[in-house]
Length: 165
Image (cartoon, rainbow, N blue to C red):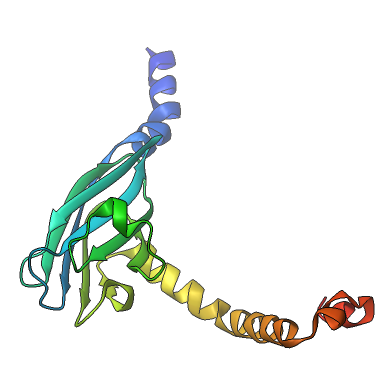
């Protein structure tokens, strides 16, 4: 009996981690209607999920189950050209976010890429992390622009390149 209780207590943390969670992503982006469609891509365990839904008056919603919290990409197809054609385009209205158990709300007056996410601890933490990285990202972008503006001969020069390390 003691042995069974010990085994149960030892496995409880793993059982809690293995439990699935349900998510709901409620979105309001502009005033788009048919043929607009929204796509959500995420992983559930080893399976990649691509889900889609119609947009009505800018509103759309996704629900699903998650083996664990994880990254997702939300894409808004405002013209209804379809996922196959949308994937070939460069300038797509998209947002990377995290899915976790519970209700996540996304809102924007015009685009998914500018949306504000609420109701999600992971997304709140990610925003804080991105803000903390901003000074480094800006410095990197400036250095990258400076290097790109140099002539090909300068870019090949070891002394010039050393200034960027």
